[in-house]
Amino acid sequence: MKRFKATVVAVALVLAACGLAEEGTTTTTSAEVDTPTTAGATPPETTDTSTGDTASTEPEAEGPSGDPIVIGAALPLTGEFADTGVFVRDGYQAMVEYWNENQGLLGRPVELIIEDDASDPGQAVSLLEKLITVDGVDLVLGGYPGSSAAAQMAVAEQHGMVYVSMGGHMASFEQGFQYSFGAPPLMGQWWYRGFFDFLETLPEDARPTSAAMMTANNPVGAAVREGTLSDLEAAGIELVMDELYDLPLASAEPLVSQAMNSGADLFIANSFFPDGVLTIRAVHALGYQPKAILEGIGTLIPSWEEELGDEGDYVFSGTAMHPDLPFTEVELLREMSNELYGTTAPPIYFMFGATWADTLAQGVEGAGDIDQDAIVGWLKSNEVCSFGGCLTYDERGLPEPYSYLVQVQDGVPQLVGPGDVTVVDPIYPIPWGE
Image (tube, rainbow, N blue to C red; front, side):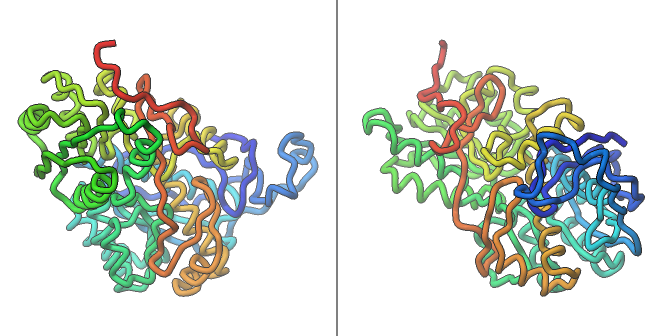
């Protein structure tokens, strides 16, 4: 197992992790305990991480002991959503390995069982049910994507299990569920909020006047479309094309051709990774040149550049996490990413997985128990600080609405807004042919 030394000490259990698990239908992270090699979860104000003087003088902390706390999850490790789901899995496993190398949870080792739902929401539901009723897991973590998460939230509620994930978009948080948390959520209704805020900073005559939109026909696409319709209306941009398509998408050229023929100078593809790649290829093949392109999820994973190269540049998207956010804890994820993937920019969905796991852990440690109601009570009455910053959760399990704006530049999804976190300036309009 790989190890690394943490250079930054964060709040609660927000610390580093290491090692990738092997691929497989079911993945179990062992509760085997090794001597910790990272610093403990000491609050920043009491720890000086710049000297390292304490490393040789402080006694080694005892590892966890007793019966393991078992956590279960079902994720898409194969199928159309696996390109993203495997990064969520890695985030879960990394945090569990870190806990076991330190004090565990509540002083006990942790075992993680991850089932492969093959990108099927029906299997995601049945596997979560199995984990709870047959395997008897103590805690659960959320699934991916939103269509699976929405379906699983009802199962978690039925069994009174805390469920921390991206959530199933706004509709799933309006069911009165008490045990679900979007921590942070991937809220489709908020997805492009950063882009429309950016448009408000432009002279009126530089903004798009019309939009063409194509949307994956599933709950995730529907959530993104819902928010985009409101954003377009508020911005005074006419929607001249609004088409749904089923997954898997065989060819994007008919829809892209329709968008180009509409004359829309804003093109919106509410897509996942495979259909997003097909769509951008079609844009270039057909010579469609709008002022801006918005894309759902595909731009946020490393394979975007691998598949598209330069053609993938200048596309805007949204996120609730990013490796360049100005939070001290993100430095730890950079070290993790370097160990796991050979890059100091942690994949965004790895960050999501690590944050969801850490939020659950903070709830457990805050409650001092694995009692589900106690965990809910703690999470809803305390500020939770993790890799994405500090959030508080309302009765629905949601923080206040927010979204960061990203744009692919030179193959990298750069943080381009809002202004207080901007790393590089957005490029607008797209410099076609330059």
